[in-house]
Image (cartoon, rainbow over all chains, first blue to last red; front, side, top):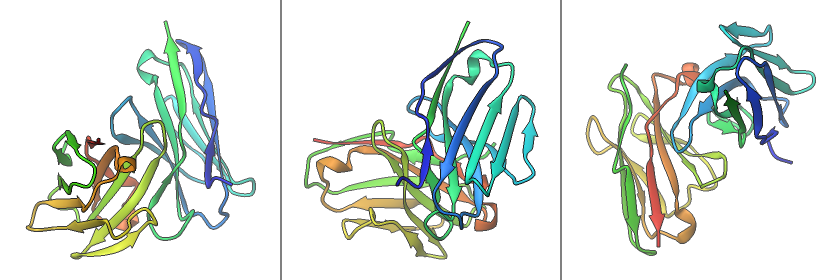
Amino acid sequence: RKEVEQDPGPFNVPEGATVAFNCTYSNSASQSFFWYRQDCRKEPKLLMSVYSSGNEDGRFTAQLNRASQYISLLIRDSKLSDSATYLCVVIGANSGYALNFGKGTSLLVTP
Amino acid sequence: EPEVTQTPSHQVTQMGQEVILRCVPISNHLYFYWYRQILGQKVEFLVSFYNNEISEKSEIFDDQFSVERPDGSNFTLKIRSTKLEDSAMYFCASSEDTSTNEKLFFGSGTQLSVL
């Protein structure tokens, strides 16, 4: 079983739509959770951390459900510039502090 | 904003050759990392480095790989005898400390092609 699993998509949505991505992780001992964004052939960039209480940053909302080992990212009012691959990242899935990446979910926002 | 710089941006090599990928982490950062991403695959951890020694490594990081901080600014990844399956984008990253691991800054990567 993969340690961090995501629906690869692609998700094709019109501008202004709301879209949600999900991620599951296999190791209940995992400690920290993040969403990164990766544009084509570029480096990953931190989008936001994910906390048990849920957190919001502008149009982006992240939630963590430790009992279900499930992480979500909600994007409201999608912009063309949101088109990218969204990477679910977990620390502590193996051991230590290495980031353990999911394969990513591809989002394409269309005019 | 400070950034991690990597050189070269592209490296083409013949199978069996040695390559050195170079990185300049952010100057006040103490923890350094190499990750790689094979085309179409997920980003994978290779190694972390702190206080002039490896602090953690993955099973990918076998005897063919080594890292070094030869001076106060550079952090290098050496692949001793490249294989076709080493073809990937290699990302260097740095952070101030592991408690702020989410503040990992990635370089723009070196695309390694092994022919």
